[in-house]
Length: 319
Image (tube, rainbow, N blue to C red; front, side, top):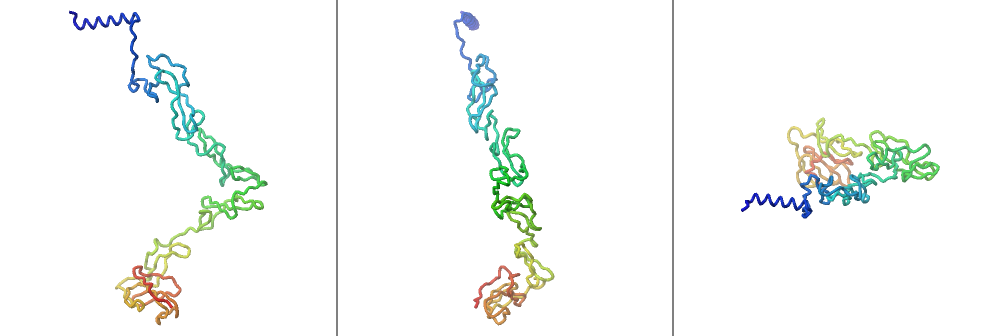
């Protein structure tokens, strides 16, 4: 009997002889592209140089590394398939615009677009990276102004760029709309400053409010007189004297309200009819009184100040 090793030796020898005679076809070499040194192409084939078993590359559809636009927003690139042929990928998203050579960028304007600014004309131009963006503003030549559409036009052929009384803010300054020719209005090229204490906002010079106290309703004591923080005529918060002594020392006494038919605490405010014989503000209508340590102080044509918010009574019947 021939042992197993001898059998294997004879089988290998027979295979070698048959192969040399051209009798046996070798099977197709199967390669997993994920494990191949050539890598995987987008279509699942191997990428990179042709495999040793695949023969030389064909001329194919494109050149290695070549890119092109599939449309205005997608691009394609040239890769080498598993067969070694160079071909195009499926369209790939740019994330912006695709230029003619397959370059992707995100433009902020369209080629040829122009706009007017306070300092002249800005034109959409291609930048060093291939994308389109607005150039720095360029002033129009003397005797010309920027009209709608971003074009410099002669003042002789006047085109209105604003409306009468328009104001355009530029930081803390502004440009007004002036009549350069009968019926033709354009922005004044000279920047104007708002009056002191005001700033330009929403097309107008507005007072820049400076509050004198922290928050509406806050109270403070000065020279033994209570002050309260309330909006003034200009809208800013101001301190107002309440003509009420500060609550220092012993508790303040309350007052008897005949209007309410009950006692009220110090700093309570009660609306009272002027028919009350103790009311010094007139004989008809209503007024307000504040309890000041057992006595009533009346507000005659004056703002109501110093009232305890928890004790305000508007219950009088006015005649």
